[in-house]
Image (cartoon, rainbow, N blue to C red; front, side, top):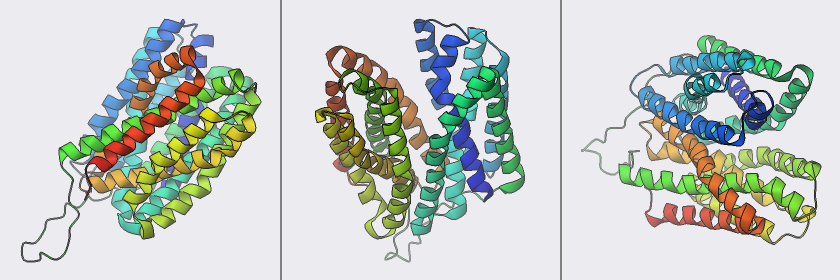
Length: 379
């Protein structure tokens, strides 16, 4: 229960702040397009660096809970300063330091869950359950944030986010005991018939990471394209986009649970490989759609792809290097901000060439990621 509450709180803090970052910079800080772009590049890059360093550190000793507490306290500092500071350069420094460190909380929570619950069917389903809490927080978070901004402005929303991070620190400190280090299996030379879980090679790990970046780039690009495509090509409005995105998030929750339960019979790798293929089918469907109704119906494909990639993917990466759950979880989480950075220029191209071309490009990227995953078989 404490772990579930911590996951929900971390997801809520992310869902409240992330969607309104550009609007905050424009309205409250009065930053121009160039400075907003710089900010939106520095934020994910610094988060990747901080999460990677903390991820490697977490696998070297029994202090994973303390790292989660430290990341949450960094979130308290970063959110608290963002509530009152309106100097662009000071906010940029805060984002590149305190906020960057706070992003390590999520991958470390997944690593904590892996160590505590373990692998196998039970571990896969448990991670899927925790992943549904993240989806639930993204259903409610943006709406809560919009209400807070309307009532008390950005001071209120960042203050509430700081309070949520403080709750995460307290729940972790008093509710999540320090787990033992992840076991490193040592094969017994006398017992050759029993397979042991061993880490894949560094080259194969990087190949999988590159494939995930391509898949996440496709997913991010499709989300960024959707409101523009609905408005310009399908003659829809903001409400249509909101309904479509909300429907997808709603469908994700039961699908993540269902695939988590199915993983024990089908296999984690097989399910994960289906994800990019389903996503490519969704992207192709949207590229050929003629109305918002067709896009809404296609959200079943979209939600299925997301559930397979995001819900099963974290377990897939943890299975690649079972002795280093911190690094595995961090690699999986870092693929999202890297994919967002790569997707930005592709969005600019799509705005000039056409949004249908953008969705087709995203579909090709998803299939390219799948091709990399099946290039070399992962044991």
